Image (cartoon, rainbow, N blue to C red; front, side, top):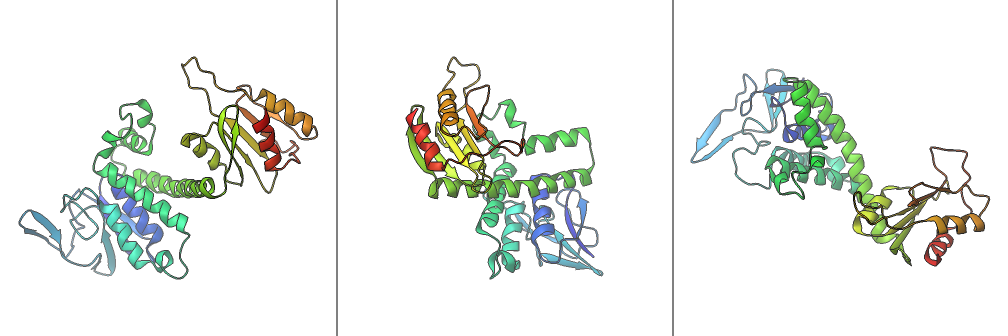
Length: 311
């Protein structure tokens, strides 16, 4: 049997390390997980903590054989996949685990490798957890804002308050969250490339705009965050169109733009299509998975951009 060992009340460094091994280290997908007090190793471990100057470390391989079982310690026990024996703020248990897996898993670096987006997504997650593990979130933008608690970090802390001493619960939550985050980061990385390589920029009365023909809806929100005032996407398969203006900021006098004239012009040019103007006047839709009865437009991306540029 194979086991991954980490510390009780696991943080994101411990959870991320366990997740990486169970998901990406060949042969360890069905490994069990055991918890020990922070800094310790599993009972009967043959490796001993050695002290040399101010540094402590465990000598031995990543995988330790105890009886008939194999064990990997992560973020505890001062072994190769721990980091508490160094003051280097650029590493954590998860970053060392990721480096180890990249050496051991040929599907990541080898001939039949994963997509670049998938590898990059994991690497970005690892980098964020390195920051969190060294308390760098106190330097993030607006660190005392309530929305900072509305995060994986805040949720894990709340879960520990709601369900104390339930390490398996934290593990389940952590693995499900990280599995989801990989997809979210892959989508973002894909959107970054689409904005850079495939976006069609245009001028409008509202300011700089950009349009896409893509199935990736993430390009819209990311483009708005970058600073585009109007964004649009046409689904190349279903023909659905989403047009969005930069939203009005809450609690300010500035209401921003209005898509009413664009809505009226598009209805005249393509009256057979189903156009829907949101009550905010900042979102114009043609077709949506939420309403399969809506009729997609026959207009091309360039024809819609021409309307948006001319109103």
